[in-house]
Image (cartoon, rainbow, N blue to C red; front, side, top):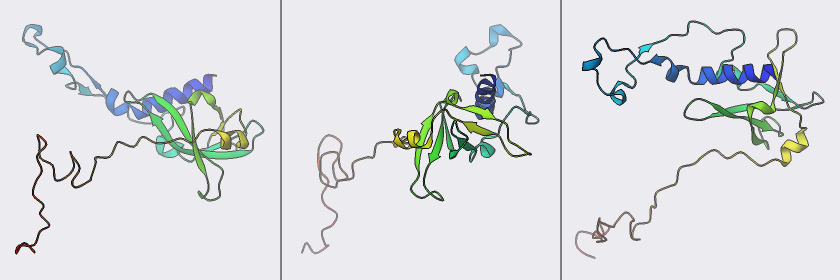
Length: 178
């Protein structure tokens, strides 16, 4: 449990280090200070000089091996999902397939994993209480895709429509009208 907490805290801290690196400055004259909303983002930079042994870099974390309860490799971390505050919501694991072909991605909350120290200088391993078949049966992870704008040329609200519902004349007619 301690390892789960350490990994979640370390990765979360790394993901939001830029956002948290600023702290609000204290005004020298409180009566002349701007409103609190105007002070946002005016803090002084707080640099992190080095990585600690219990911290992971996201660039090194991608590709971390994921094993089942019986220590069989079932995939690897392909991405990390986090919210606007930097809180890690899930580790995206690529499961099955061969050399990336035929694999699927499944997202699991960080508390689903136990961290197992690597052997003989190897990187740490993430362990799940699930097996590969259970992960293959899990729901696929789908990244967010923003809605697309309509691109029809003549439908209301399309490319040829004007504000207020009017239509533009077609620009596809030849200059001689034929």
